[in-house]
Image (spheres, rainbow, N blue to C red):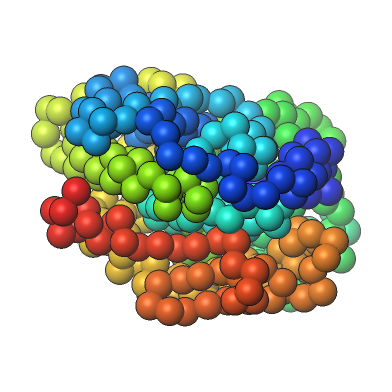
Amino acid sequence: MSIKPLKTLLCAISVVLAGSLPISAYAEPKQQFNLAWSIYAGWMPWKYADESGIMKKWADKYGIKVNITQINDYVESINQYTAGKYDAVVLTSMDALSIPAAGGVDSTALIVGDYSNGNDGIVMKDSADMKTLKGQKINLVELSVSHYLLAHALESVGLSEKDVKVVNTSDADIVGSFASKDVRNVVTWNPLLDQVAAVPGVHRVFDSSQIPGHIKDLTLVNSKTLADNPAFGKAVVGAWYEVMGIIASNTPAGAKARAFLGEASGTDQAGYESQLKGMKMFWTPAESLAFIESQQAYNAMDSVRQFSFAHGLLGQGAANADFIGISLPNGKLLGDAKNVKLRFDTSYMQMARDNRL
């Protein structure tokens, strides 16, 4: 699971493009919509929704078409969403804040699907003691959720980012880099995490289960598009929770779906099920709602925005962490009420819970 720094060139270009256009340029009443996803256990269900025909069934119900597109480069999928090429994208809450929101794109978390509960972690070759990281290099996707996880891990043993040297490494290169003698420590997410942790003699020293609720996975949509096209929101949410019901079920259909998604993500049914165990999945809309309305979720989002500001991810105009407003359920707000760019709107999940879709 990755986020991308505004400091990187690709993201910077996309944010400039996004910031130069009014939000209204992205949205208009229409019949066809585009959703981008990338490979991660919590987002693989969109592939099943697409290929099983479940997404088409729900789209047909509302007289629209929803195209679901896999993009192999996760960061690029967010950049393209930010630039207006997609109506929806899957990403972490930190990504949602640091890229589209920071770029001026008003977005809504339509679905809160899960949070990482062990699927992101730190692996060391030479020691099982994180205190020995002092003075060492650590390879990770800089300014990503891996970086965020590292900051919390270091703090837990009395260290800080100043005590280590972060080496920015693409998620595509993490596994190969770890095979090198020069790379001793990495932070990454599954399925990459399981691959590096399987190297003989290494130590998995910290993971996201120690910061539950902080690395949230969302399906994010353009707020103006959603406002103009509520049928899009209903179809997407309806399809998602139907798929969740199948994948979670202890049935032949559920096993077949998990095997399909395992193969599609480069593993098998057992491998995919293992990845699911590293997540707190919200299989039902009621579970999604209970989490995102909790104090735990509020506190985690506050921590994410503080990290994002401290690392320059909220944009050049951000004087403090309050620069961007984040609207949460039940009237809660983080940041500037006059500059809300990230919204956790629970109305569609409530419709799903109440069988009103």
